[in-house]
Amino acid sequence: MEDSFDSSIPLPELEVVLSVCVKRNIDPTSSPEAESFFLTVIREANQNGVNLNEAIRESLNEFRSVSAPPPWIQNPDWQFTNNRPMVFVGHIDVPAQAGQFHDEARFFVFWDPETGATKTLVQVA
Image (tube, rainbow, N blue to C red; front, side, top):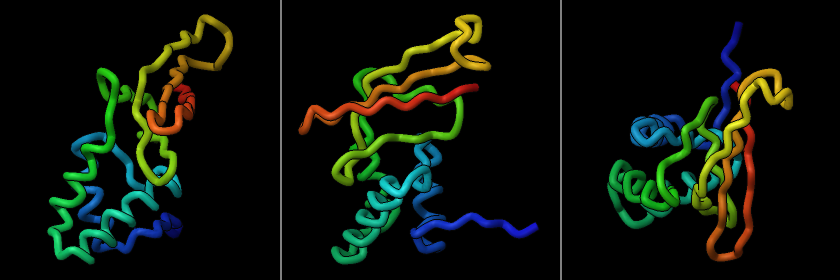
């Protein structure tokens, strides 16, 4: 069986990005928006002669939370708007006993302070 993983981030840079992001529980390949954000960081680092490790570490400051980071129950899936990470506002747990989902679920709420846009993501255990 062949591995079908595909990313628009070139492999050498992807290895660097993943090694930095894993420490903050951020998946740079979770969505096209996430990949676009990190491709921009890579391009700017290359253009400005900045060390990629440092540029990625610095970019993680844009992943902000109102209080605590998202307590993911599946793979990290940070939300983006305008090629920037949104602010994580909080989460709402829905127990399996509520009968809405086949298992426990968690809603994650994200907000863009510049536009006021919000996004909600649900993960089911």
